[in-house]
Length: 54
Image (tube, rainbow, N blue to C red; front, side, top):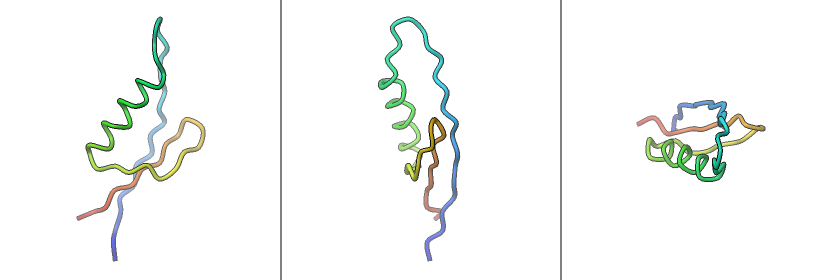
């Protein structure tokens, strides 16, 4: 049976002049994806991730 580890991220973005929310979020989510984390759910600005334990 597959086993997973979980991660909870409360992602807060500090706004600055000319800050593009979607660009910052894309960079953050892609960074986690490169580490093997898969988005499992979202509740507001709390993101739940999982990745398989090998």
